Length: 149
Image 1 (cartoon, rainbow, N blue to C red):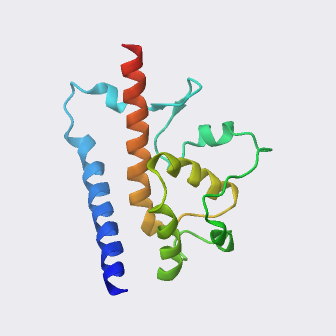
Image 2 (image 1 turned 90 degrees about the horizontal axis):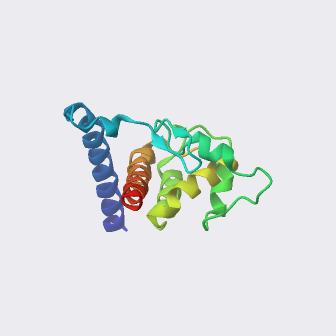
Protein backbone atom coordinates (compact mmCIF):
# COMPACT_ATOMS: atom_id res chain seq x y z
CA UNK A 1 0.00 0.00 0.00
CA UNK A 2 2.85 2.37 0.80
CA UNK A 3 4.47 1.53 -2.55
CA UNK A 4 1.32 2.66 -4.36
CA UNK A 5 1.29 5.88 -2.35
CA UNK A 6 4.93 6.57 -3.31
CA UNK A 7 4.16 5.94 -6.97
CA UNK A 8 1.16 8.28 -6.94
CA UNK A 9 3.16 10.97 -5.13
CA UNK A 10 6.03 10.58 -7.62
CA UNK A 11 3.62 11.00 -10.53
CA UNK A 12 2.13 14.12 -8.95
CA UNK A 13 5.58 15.61 -8.30
CA UNK A 14 6.60 14.82 -11.87
CA UNK A 15 3.41 16.43 -13.16
CA UNK A 16 4.01 19.59 -11.14
CA UNK A 17 7.62 19.74 -12.33
CA UNK A 18 6.53 19.37 -15.95
CA UNK A 19 3.85 22.01 -15.47
CA UNK A 20 6.37 24.47 -14.05
CA UNK A 21 8.82 23.71 -16.87
CA UNK A 22 6.14 24.26 -19.51
CA UNK A 23 5.01 27.44 -17.80
CA UNK A 24 8.50 28.96 -18.02
CA UNK A 25 9.13 27.70 -21.54
CA UNK A 26 7.15 30.38 -23.46
CA UNK A 27 9.34 33.08 -21.89
CA UNK A 28 12.40 31.46 -23.45
CA UNK A 29 11.02 31.31 -27.00
CA UNK A 30 12.66 33.35 -29.69
CA UNK A 31 10.84 35.85 -31.88
CA UNK A 32 11.07 33.31 -34.72
CA UNK A 33 8.17 31.36 -33.23
CA UNK A 34 5.26 33.84 -33.19
CA UNK A 35 2.72 31.19 -34.24
CA UNK A 36 2.97 29.48 -30.82
CA UNK A 37 1.61 32.65 -29.25
CA UNK A 38 -1.60 32.47 -31.27
CA UNK A 39 -4.70 31.20 -29.45
CA UNK A 40 -5.65 27.59 -30.05
CA UNK A 41 -8.19 27.12 -32.81
CA UNK A 42 -11.38 25.31 -31.96
CA UNK A 43 -13.06 22.87 -34.30
CA UNK A 44 -15.57 25.40 -35.61
CA UNK A 45 -12.99 27.99 -36.67
CA UNK A 46 -13.34 30.18 -33.56
CA UNK A 47 -10.51 30.73 -31.13
CA UNK A 48 -9.87 29.21 -27.74
CA UNK A 49 -7.94 31.41 -25.36
CA UNK A 50 -6.01 28.44 -23.95
CA UNK A 51 -6.24 29.73 -20.39
CA UNK A 52 -8.72 27.13 -19.15
CA UNK A 53 -8.50 23.38 -18.73
CA UNK A 54 -11.42 22.96 -21.08
CA UNK A 55 -12.02 25.50 -23.76
CA UNK A 56 -15.19 27.28 -22.70
CA UNK A 57 -16.12 27.80 -26.31
CA UNK A 58 -16.00 24.06 -26.99
CA UNK A 59 -17.96 23.32 -23.82
CA UNK A 60 -20.66 25.81 -24.77
CA UNK A 61 -20.96 24.27 -28.23
CA UNK A 62 -22.06 21.00 -26.71
CA UNK A 63 -25.77 20.36 -26.89
CA UNK A 64 -27.10 20.93 -23.36
CA UNK A 65 -29.82 18.37 -24.01
CA UNK A 66 -27.30 15.64 -24.77
CA UNK A 67 -26.60 13.04 -22.13
CA UNK A 68 -23.63 13.62 -19.83
CA UNK A 69 -20.99 10.96 -20.37
CA UNK A 70 -19.59 9.07 -17.42
CA UNK A 71 -16.06 7.69 -17.43
CA UNK A 72 -16.66 4.98 -14.84
CA UNK A 73 -16.62 7.77 -12.24
CA UNK A 74 -20.12 7.84 -10.81
CA UNK A 75 -18.67 7.96 -7.29
CA UNK A 76 -17.39 11.49 -8.00
CA UNK A 77 -20.97 12.80 -8.10
CA UNK A 78 -20.78 12.95 -4.30
CA UNK A 79 -18.36 15.90 -4.67
CA UNK A 80 -20.69 18.15 -6.67
CA UNK A 81 -20.66 21.71 -5.39
CA UNK A 82 -17.35 21.36 -3.50
CA UNK A 83 -14.61 23.94 -3.90
CA UNK A 84 -11.43 22.85 -5.70
CA UNK A 85 -9.34 23.45 -2.57
CA UNK A 86 -11.69 21.68 -0.13
CA UNK A 87 -10.82 18.05 -0.89
CA UNK A 88 -9.10 15.70 1.55
CA UNK A 89 -6.18 13.53 0.37
CA UNK A 90 -8.46 10.48 0.16
CA UNK A 91 -10.94 12.40 -1.98
CA UNK A 92 -8.14 13.62 -4.25
CA UNK A 93 -7.04 10.00 -4.62
CA UNK A 94 -10.52 9.11 -5.92
CA UNK A 95 -10.06 11.69 -8.71
CA UNK A 96 -6.52 10.45 -9.39
CA UNK A 97 -7.72 6.87 -9.78
CA UNK A 98 -10.12 7.94 -12.51
CA UNK A 99 -7.67 10.35 -14.19
CA UNK A 100 -4.78 7.89 -14.39
CA UNK A 101 -7.01 5.27 -16.02
CA UNK A 102 -8.22 7.59 -18.79
CA UNK A 103 -6.82 7.62 -22.29
CA UNK A 104 -5.19 10.99 -23.03
CA UNK A 105 -7.80 11.78 -25.68
CA UNK A 106 -10.60 11.23 -23.13
CA UNK A 107 -9.33 13.75 -20.56
CA UNK A 108 -11.03 16.79 -22.12
CA UNK A 109 -14.34 14.93 -22.33
CA UNK A 110 -13.97 13.90 -18.70
CA UNK A 111 -13.41 17.51 -17.68
CA UNK A 112 -16.53 18.56 -19.58
CA UNK A 113 -18.43 15.75 -17.85
CA UNK A 114 -17.25 17.00 -14.45
CA UNK A 115 -18.20 20.56 -15.39
CA UNK A 116 -21.71 19.52 -16.42
CA UNK A 117 -22.16 17.62 -13.17
CA UNK A 118 -21.00 20.60 -11.05
CA UNK A 119 -17.82 18.89 -9.86
CA UNK A 120 -14.64 20.93 -9.53
CA UNK A 121 -11.31 19.24 -10.14
CA UNK A 122 -9.03 19.24 -7.06
CA UNK A 123 -6.31 21.89 -7.28
CA UNK A 124 -3.61 19.28 -6.66
CA UNK A 125 -4.55 17.43 -9.83
CA UNK A 126 -4.83 20.44 -12.14
CA UNK A 127 -1.16 20.62 -13.25
CA UNK A 128 -1.12 17.01 -14.46
CA UNK A 129 -4.50 17.36 -16.16
CA UNK A 130 -3.43 20.62 -17.81
CA UNK A 131 -0.35 18.94 -19.28
CA UNK A 132 -2.43 16.19 -20.88
CA UNK A 133 -5.00 18.63 -22.30
CA UNK A 134 -2.27 20.89 -23.67
CA UNK A 135 -0.47 17.95 -25.27
CA UNK A 136 -3.67 16.78 -26.93
CA UNK A 137 -4.36 20.28 -28.30
CA UNK A 138 -0.82 20.50 -29.68
CA UNK A 139 -1.16 17.08 -31.32
CA UNK A 140 -4.46 18.09 -32.94
CA UNK A 141 -2.93 21.35 -34.12
CA UNK A 142 0.09 19.54 -35.58
CA UNK A 143 -2.18 17.04 -37.32
CA UNK A 144 -4.25 19.86 -38.85
CA UNK A 145 -1.10 21.58 -40.12
CA UNK A 146 0.13 18.32 -41.60
CA UNK A 147 -3.22 17.75 -43.34
CA UNK A 148 -3.18 21.28 -44.77
CA UNK A 149 0.29 20.83 -46.26
